[in-house]
Image (cartoon, rainbow, N blue to C red; front, top):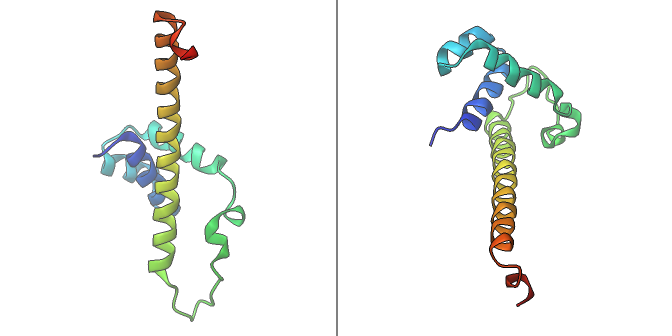
Length: 111
């Protein structure tokens, strides 16, 4: 399932890697202004010093960097953001359903 949120996460990942917004827009088939909007959201997020990845020790340029671990952490962070959005969506749906049920029958909550 390729949702807009998945595209946004992918685009933000590519931006972090240094890819140019125009190239990302062409790759994902979205308008360049969408990429810049997603870039603004990325820039507004807390700095890396506040994120989980900051717990990874910095290595010397001559040392091997454990890209597998860094990629796994980034993937988990992206998945976490995606799940948070899904929870917010579900909360909205449940709230709407409660309102609809309450409007139909005020007694159902008292049972």
